[in-house]
Image (tube, rainbow, N blue to C red; front, top):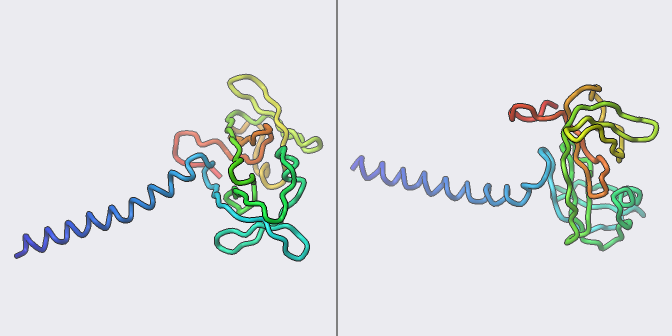
Amino acid sequence: MNCQRFRCLAFATVLAAFSIASPVAHAATGSEHLAQGHTQFSSVVTKKAGALVVTTPNGAIHQLNANMARRHGQEPFKAGDEVIVVLDENNYIVDMHLKGKEGTHRQVTGKLIHVGRMNKQIKLQTPDGEQVFPLAEEGQKTKGMAEGELVTFELNEAGTVIDMHRADIGGGGRKD
């Protein structure tokens, strides 16, 4: 009798493990291309109190800025546009595209040489030599980043830095 109970319990455990693991694996495949800590969702641009906004799946509302679209080389969004939105770990919009026209980003890692606050540029020493990249917004992204520190930039399709983190050295996770 105990052997039969054990088999039933083992079968139920395996069944539960598969039912939990399947959706988790499916969710991971949809956002493999995202930088660590980023989330992506689709939304429709709406107008609230005269401003264009997108709403996250949990109900948070983000106001849009026409200049953000221009910085990414796009036309400003309009009410009714279906969009894909990428939020960073602080729930700040780092990228947004019309649905079906998602961009391709790349990551560059190197030693931080200089943050040009006046002309919003950032200089990085990479294996390919010194490179200068335009910086979308200096603000929070560069706070606490010291010259000489190993960092990873996320560049949008226009080659502009849209996100920045201390580099993950040793595979143990980011050092934020």
